[in-house]
Length: 180
Ligand code: S3P
Image (cartoon, rainbow, N blue to C red; front, side):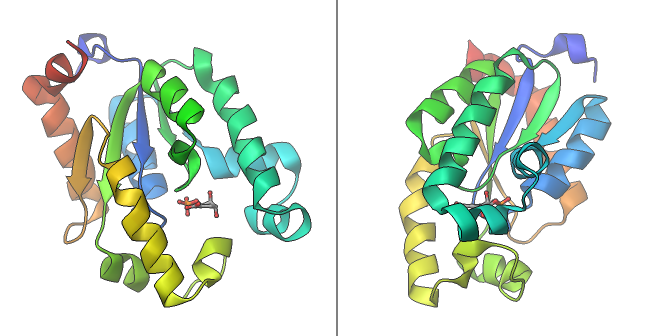
């Protein structure tokens, strides 16, 4: 697809931890010949600390403020696929800024799928919570993620299929509906 045909300048991927934002984002960027940025990775690079370390040493509030600063820096981005952290868009200012610069694409996955994908990994501070707390987080966040321009159910499909589905929806003139 010709990049010039698109009516938006960036694609923002959002959704719960383990929904595939980074993996999908990298491949989607490659397909579009756009650049890719992962907000967690960018924060780690800028701060010289892993997300885990920021949470451990300085707390979640500090991480959220790093996220906010980074999102502000993204406002002149063009032709980027931006994979956000699962909590980035919960901040209404971040949502507003990101939705002004690109098409908001939410990657949905059922809670069971999320737990299957990342339940055993220990690199996400919020996944160390109890099952009940993770479930509450997942339930509470769905209405926010569902406000995206496009919601893709990734529960039973692989990364390439998710990328294909996003591209098909965009090619189908979706952006004209979403962005008038
Ligand atoms: C978070 C998700 C993580 C990371 C941080 C907090 C969240 O990113 O930003 O651990 O609040 O959901 P991923 O969604 O890429 O795992």
